[in-house]
Image 1: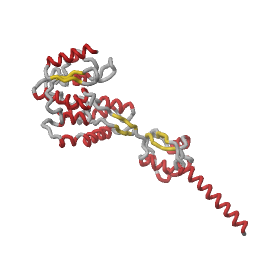
Image 2: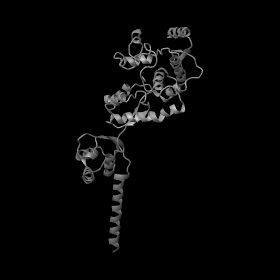
Image 3: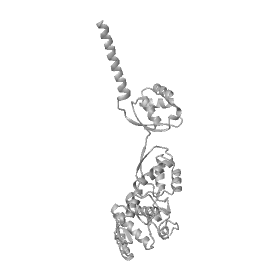
Image 4: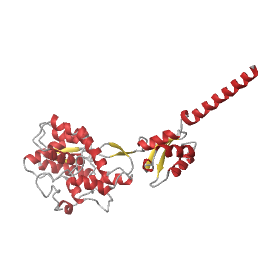
Length: 323
């Protein structure tokens, strides 16, 4: 009797040890993170085999059985997923079905980018179709409201969802500024000036001064004569392989585009880029008691400001000689 008890106890202990090992291997062991991709049109069997080959699941048969009992083909959404090796099959299946493990690409849009630059980056990372993105931006007149920030998007995200995410950030971060700092300028006018300030300024402390210069010129009916508006009008420069052409020529300054503020009075028709929070705030809160009408780059990334044209010319020649 004691012998039988001992044998039974030994078998029971071994069973517990085996169960423990199974649970550890299949449920508790930390696996290596990896990105797993499901291709369009793949069957459950193909996905199961790939999961097994990658070491994500232990049994392709078990995964296929669970899929057959609880899922359908539409649950295997094509895309990339953040998974780990040594995951329970049911966890993998639930993760894919729910979309909670969908792999997201981190993208940062920069202050002062025009919508075309954003579209190009989205296309390079296969987030959405660039032209579809631009069509929505132009139809809804959203240049200036694609807030520069860091975003996380899955591949093949609908263009409208990408646009809405950027505008939502604008509404959350920038929109409240208009209530906090009331102005006689319209929202579009503020964003237009801010977009020019964004392209001119490098240092945050200069933004209110540059904004003041442009606002001062607008108030007295003086043309803005802002280089960034000409760069925007010229579009993509094939020779430099970029937007925002460097080294504008006199011929460039004669471009007839309504965005060219050397040729046309007042503001351009719309923002030329997507400004930062700081640039919008600078337009709403320009440098007080600052009556400068001109500024010139001082070869360090900063600017030197002048009240008169003669003073401006002297400084312009000074920095030109220092180059």
